[in-house]
Length: 267
Ligand code: NAP
Ligand code: GCO
Image 1 (tube, helix red, strand yellow):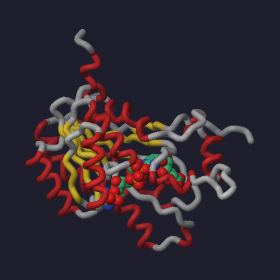
Image 2 (tube, helix red, strand yellow):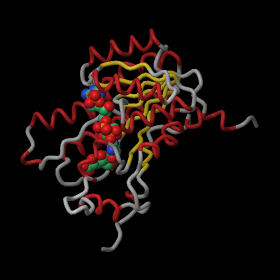
Image 3 (cartoon, protein in one colour):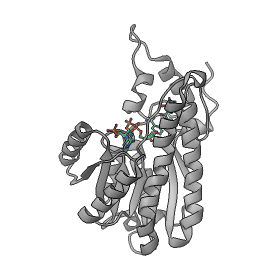
């Protein structure tokens, strides 16, 4: 049997990672590049784009960056066309772009709720719809949706986010169901609590230097006893983007240090 590790190679593949200017998306893009993929990424901010291009270059990655708001279908279609011209058709899509608003539901405006669902759920439909035709034509494709603990669990103040991430789990399963016959695999990655700008407010030291209460809470809920880092997601992403996972479809791979398995440390 030839070296099975070749099954994890992404040589010759084009990967689009949305919202990959920093955070989880940047780490996943770095990992896919290290496995051989050509990288395209997007974000909304010119400033973020310029900084990210410099960061990718420093990491030795010739990434192509695009300004594109993933909630705007016209911008997404134009971006996918530009990627096809610059790098080739998209073989691997990672729907990573996302936001969170932590507001008690009864205080949350409909506009805020709609914005979170638009970015965290509707955009995954929009971008997947833009890349699926080529994947169908070539009878091969990988779509990875970045879900969450909130695809399975609720908590105070994150009603919109949980609704969106729960919907993203089922969109993942539906794309897998509808397009599996074309050798397209659609899976999710469900990160636990990861140290990125998105969770900074939950980790800030208190004025007296003590841990943020939520930080202590997560320590007690995570068997690994630590916050995840974006690099913890690289292996799962390369696996789900590679031929090694060609018979894995509609699965949400939770990368959470054991949170979903654990009742929590006794106080
Ligand atoms: P982050 O640090 O806040 O980064 C979010 C990225 O998405 C940024 O690059 C942002 O760039 C981009 N973005 C936001 N809205 C966009 C839009 N409408 N169009 C295009 N790009 C957009 O977040 P993160 O912690 O890396 O999280 C990345 C993904 O993982 C999200 O889907 C998040 O829900 C999920 N997740 C995070 C955690 C965690 O603990 N951190 C755990 C589970 C799941 P611009 O602002 O420049 O557009
Ligand atoms: C929160 C956090 C979480 C994480 C992640 C957990 O406020 O609870 O932001 O939602 O971002 O989604 O998987």
